[in-house]
Amino acid sequence: MGSLLDNLEASCRVHAKEAIGSATIIYSKDGNTFALTNYHVVAKNIQYKDDWDNILKREIKKEFLSPVEILFPKIEENDVIGYNTRLADIIIYNKEQDIVLLKVKSKDDYPSVPLYPRDETRNIKALDLLGVIGAALGETPVFTEGRLQTKQKMIDNYEYWLSSALSIYGNSGGGVFTPHKDEWKFIGIPSRIAVTGGWSTQAILT
Image (cartoon, rainbow, N blue to C red; front, side):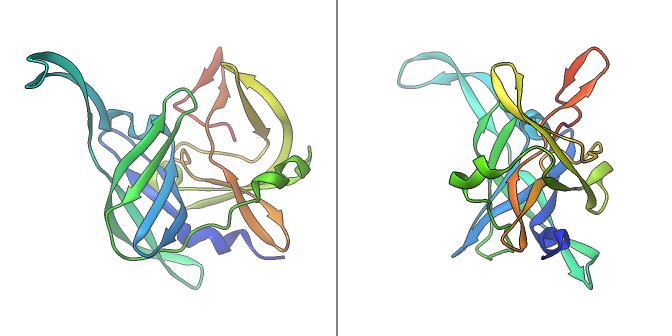
């Protein structure tokens, strides 16, 4: 069995306008690198403003997207010894599901996580082992392990998977992994956590 550490280089930090979180590189080939993070991490980089439209000859509300910084870890002997910083554009987002796709502004290729086959996710059962990697508190990646508790936790009409793997502030956008064919494969990102009085997107539930 491979190690959860094998996904360390694809687990990055994100610096947005008013938040620090994590991102996970899900694809990188031929200079096209894409990462997933949470909407609430980059929310202040997504703004809507009234702007004059020369064609319509009136003010309309337009979307303005600011790039974020992604910090790629430099690894030696499974330790983070520094970071390389690149800008990334917000490509698409879903506020309700708290997810954002980023594209890195670089022609270089980077390590990416192996993806769990979508058509086999039905085989993931309660009490299966899960691992979480994220830049907790804006520091170097933290690794935690737990078990899948349920796949049928409904929040705002969306299905979430509940895990006992500990998540810490700053893990938002990090990766959630489970073993598959002798390696840890990516199945999603932390999204919400149970807090007193309800749910919060300022913390995380995997």
